[in-house]
Image (spheres, rainbow, N blue to C red):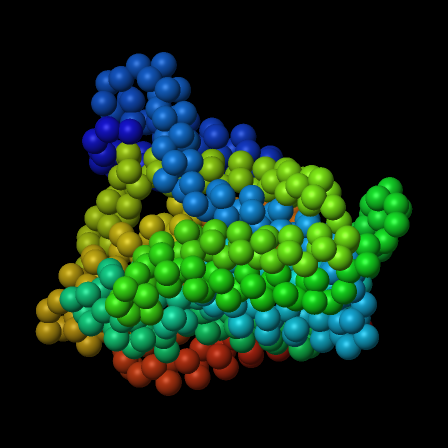
Length: 505
């Protein structure tokens, strides 16, 4: 946009707070995000003595700029939406559902299968949400698992897994921010201290294996039976309207999805320069969305080569599927573009990150408290801006500088781990986070219902993490910290289950 960033002080936290508050109250995310962006531009124009009309112009300048900056992400999403529609219409999803339905017959096994598949796709969080959602949604519907629960499983095995996977775009991004602390080696050392990621995975498997829920998710699961029936009825009606059933087979689903996964990884490596001599871990983080786009295009080409010669669909039906797939992504793309715009206002124009950074530096407490404080600040900032990458991009250099002295060096790695954990917590449950939006899209769940139902789960884990970082700050022992945190989380869940059971008597 060519405008200089200003430091708006406490006013800089108003736009994200306005957007989040309006979204939670009104249950309408589009207008809430737009108002948040507009309020940020009004603050910028007020502080720089510009006119109201310029604030309106700056809103659309910001949105246009973000569309340009994230062009590959937009292309990737519309191609993936097209692939989902085409594979579904081929009959491959039906065939896979019938095959898996003979093996996955209970809610517990369906949830565990979703969690395991989510853990297996760790290269990119958005890719994880959409791919796992596409594959598992027909099965979870059949097992009468609510769309809200599926969205939580997708979200909880996306960013929390990527942030502790050494081979991922996230690892390279973090390593680039902590070069002075050791780069990728420093990232690997933070993994045991990334309590939010570890405890979220523990939480996912506990909830899946025990079939235990609480809060809004419990109510959603109680309605999950009817939702599954409605989804099945809707799909049956669509098939009836389409006429004859497609003669798709399991490979008609598996091969395009496998092509997508393999070619996406190869595409990220190719775009990043792996075949020109760069290290693999560095290459895949260079431009991951470009690689994902190449992988999705390759999967569409494979689907075309499989379906047309066997007359599963003709060329016109294939192209209509592409257009319909693009249409299915319009709501998610609209939210993403508005979320990018709000994040851009906060980071690039009114200095939300700078204000929070000054707050961190102003806190004068013993270094043993630093990991817990950093976790809380990172969580708030990430939740407000809806971006883990933007949050740790701001805070990691600051934390490194704070721990540069002899006293701080002992808590450097725990503090870096706490920064990443807090960033992922905010990204996990913020309604304006792209990962949260994509989890809703992958599960085909109403976005704010997903936010509402997963917030108690994510926040419970975050509270345990805060206490765990108090332990980490003073013991500086990763194994003691992890053991104490896991036991505290499981003990808390057991206490909630016991209380619920006692209340029913």
